[in-house]
Image 1 (tube, rainbow, N blue to C red):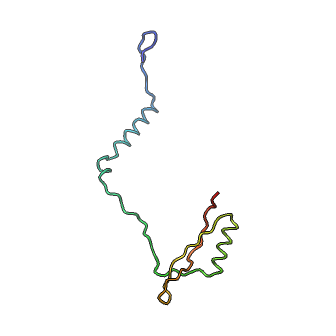
Image 2 (cartoon, helix red, strand yellow):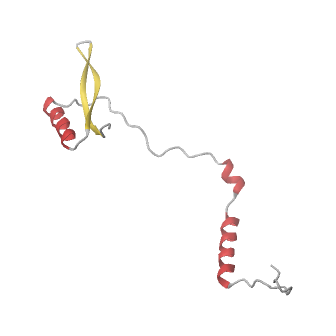
Image 3 (cartoon, rainbow, N blue to C red):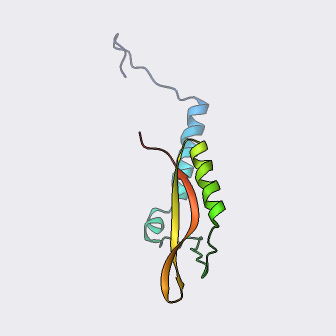
Length: 103
């Protein structure tokens, strides 16, 4: 940037700014951009594991779960699954979970 008096001035870089620039350039040079775009995304390491039989909750366990949710100021959500008993599908409670209340 020229000096208002007409004399040219030179910006002398400090050693710190040279080191930062060198580190950034080295980091950018180590990336291989074309390979990163063509690599396939690896599969997830987690799997969904589903049990064939889920034990149902007893009546007392359901009541206790609902009371705990209400005592915490939350709303209970009862999850049920259908079980085949005597060739009929009968719902049975498998989990009681707590969610925030709506305002």
